[in-house]
Length: 137
Image 1: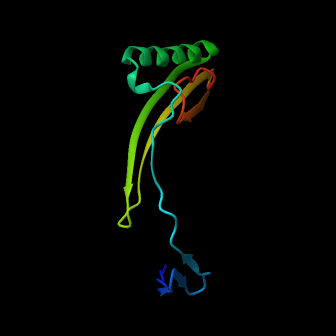
Image 2 (image 1 turned 90 degrees about the vertical axis):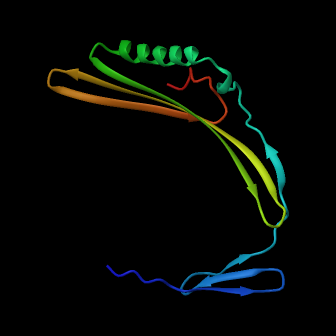
C-alpha cells in the first residue's frame, strides 16, 4: 500500500487564513471572540467527598442484584470508576478557560450457565453530573 501525502496551502488574507488541499474544499479561519471563563463541575452529589466504604457498599449492592436476578448466574463483575479532570487552556492571544470534567462509570457483567450453554451479559452507564446511579441498571 502506498500512502500519498498531499500538500496543504495556507493563504493569508487581511483578517483570515484560508487552508486548502488538492481535492478538498477550503477551510477559512477567522478571528473569533475571545472567551474567558471558569466552569466548575455541576455535580448533583460530589463523589470526591464520599467515603470509600459508601462506594464499596454501592458496588456490593449491584453485585447482589445481579447474582439474585436468576439462579443460572454463576459469576458477576461490577466495575466502578471515577475520574476528575481539570482542563486549563490559555492562548497566546490572551484567551483563558478552566473547565472541570468529572466522570463516573459503572458497568455490570454477568455470566450464566444452563447445562452446556454459557451466556454473558453486560450493561453500563456513564455520567458527568450524578453519582446517583440507582436507576441506571
